[in-house]
Image (cartoon, rainbow, N blue to C red):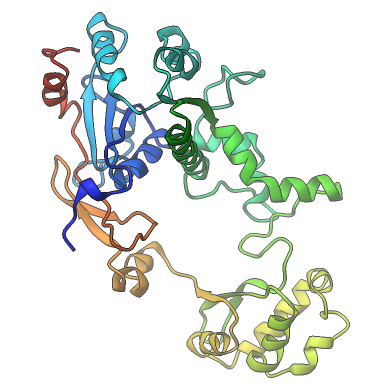
Length: 388
């Protein structure tokens, strides 16, 4: 269908984001996807340092492409008199302001959320930090992997022999989604009350919430949640299983009904369901290695496709262990048209549609901007000449 940006849910919302790296840019990109005008403020010259994380997409950083489509780039020196003049002209026009400057920098510049809300009572302003605005770590610099370490994420990922970080920027992603959530709540509140909102989001607080399950487990048992590699830490059978054709498939059992279906319909061993070593999940966890061997013995005469078909017929959730290359060719991804093209200064590159599907609306997939690409148009709009 033809796209009409004016009809998108966030059309008419202007976001000014003094952003770098991943968390804040990811949040503002989600706002841009659904119609918000996002003005990304960058350093003159090099711009957001995320631009140079790699150069694998026609010379553009893969992470920058991911987090910065559909934005306008305004390159100004916010510490200079000229840059401050631009911000002073721009902020009264903004509905949302997001900043993730280094600890203390926004306060020194008068760009923290509390100060801005006093100046602009309808503004929605968000401060993004590593560890929050107070406490002994408030001035500590923070990046995704380092916060994973501090929050115990590595302690619950990897194998018994060695911890591992999550392969995605999970702390940044969590924070970006909480920023997005806060902005949307504040927009709704302003719609009802006419009042703006100042709020904070931090990398540490965001992943702390995501760590609730292992933290609650440890607090209640007095023991750490074990690292189990690709297996589930507290449910069995749930994880990888070798099959007769040499491949590995995954499946997970969530309840007694599925356990009985696995035994009778997939393993052809209905009596196993009531075996005294396996009849409850706590027992299956205690005897997981023996259960794993028994299941893999049953699978030894079958191909992975045969086992997956039996699991589907038994309504047991399952999966192939795909590589990223296989994922890129995934029939579900391709059949549903989830892969698109986005323009950049170095030519077109691939991009995924945003995760939400809203019938009747097509999200924006507009170009990834070059550094300062929109200076002239934005400054002209503000009635200002070239300012840096």
